Image (cartoon, rainbow, N blue to C red; front, top):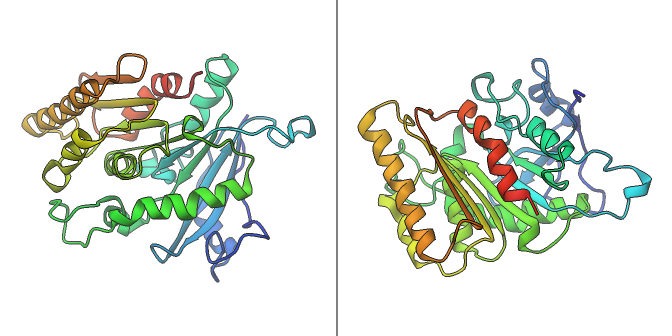
Length: 300
């Protein structure tokens, strides 16, 4: 069943500015969300969300499991998967180039098939023109002329986003009940968060991660990390960059990260790695691999 995303107000007892509208009308923000025909399946709730860390407002897009509001389930709590680039996850009307990951359809199919238990999924929108600044933690990244602010992303996530979601929704606590992921720069900042704040997220999804950042500092950090999530999904395509040499370099970086993880003791039960022949750097490719990723990461 196709659903209509609905704008949700912040919780009345939430101290601001975190999670507040901060003077921006929800109706104005909703114009962007509903531009075009929605392709959302299920119950997607959209919160205008103001960050004190970054000083801006974006959406949090929260997909709740079927029957979340049923009285018989009012005491049930759910694990939560947080994904970056929220605009691209659920709805072709807001996805980059009209493409989306199809997270809602994939979750629904896997849940109906009994392959995963119910999860809440939170899509954290990027900051549009400031996306790279917020997702890049290191200077010298070779991405435009900007001041990287990604070092603050874990604080934004852990001190603002997680408390807001925990105040609004019935969530389960503990690392095995919390996942984090993204693609490209969104995967890089997810990995950076796991490396700098170990033990928070027990399930991590890394699609086409930008491991070249800061002269491959993420790979150096991975070698030094001693606490890894319960499960890690890592994937890339062989035509990510559209040019053979650059694409091969990206795949080598992913293979190097795989070697690091294997060296830290992540065997087949904890690590899945996919290198897809001919796959590009796009929402379409990430959507195609998503069923495998979520089966592995979210299954019991």
